[in-house]
Amino acid sequence: MSAPTSPTDLYRHSLRLLLDKDIPAWVGLWAEDGSMEFPFAPDGSPKRLENREAIAAYMRHYPDHIDLHDFPELLIHQTTAPETIVVEMRGVGRLVQGDRPFDMTYIAVVTVQDGRFTSYRDYWNPLAVLDTDFTGSNR
Image 1 (tube, rainbow, N blue to C red):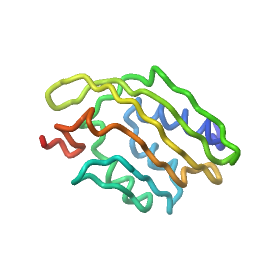
Image 2 (image 1 turned 180 degrees about the vertical axis):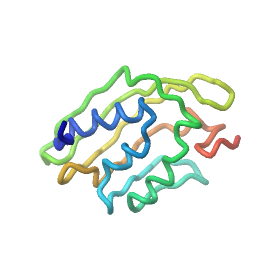
Image 3 (image 1 turned 60 degrees about the vertical axis):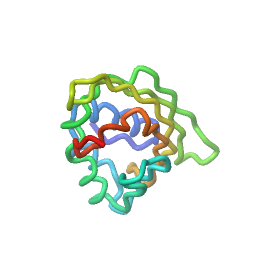
């Protein structure tokens, strides 16, 4: 099977990889110089990751902290720029530490070039996980 190249297909494929907890394959969907931004990140959390290596380091332990089960609400909007999509979605699962429910609503602006993510602005709600960060420490 060839790798998905349209922004919508690539994004859907990336969600499947997250549900499968295949972080190395998910990171492999990124351009070497891709960037990931978190405009609403709380103090102490990164606001911007500058390249695939930084994204890989950030995501490496994601499944150890958040056990995703589904993305039950997914809307992907096309934009006037064919390489850019706007995504509305909800991720549900559990926070591994404390075995608590995880339910997060996201809006993301995602750009894909040559079949790889080049830019991902993730507008997630930090209040939903305010007492836990991805390193597993309580705040």
